[in-house]
Length: 94
Image 1 (cartoon, rainbow, N blue to C red):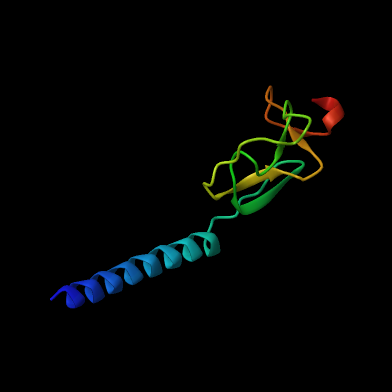
Image 2 (image 1 turned 120 degrees about the horizontal axis):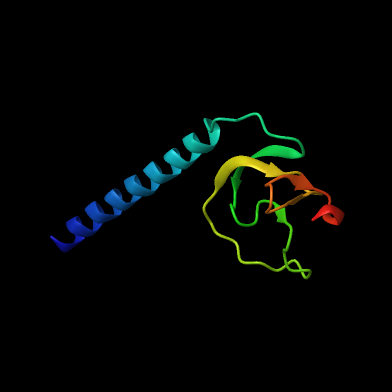
């Protein structure tokens, strides 16, 4: 009986993991790409806290990142999100 329950639990766990993987792939594949503003690009599967540079980021580049896999418009890699107007600007304009 114990072996049968163990096999059933493993099958259930495999099915649950497969469902999560399929849903993640579908979300990334069918994420609604939007028109981004000036200096922005659409990115999928990015950390919402580390997917772009922000004015006021630590100079050493070390910052905590969330594992939330956001899909949205982010600043180009060489630009920074300015808090006052949410625009993407060069570092000198922060």
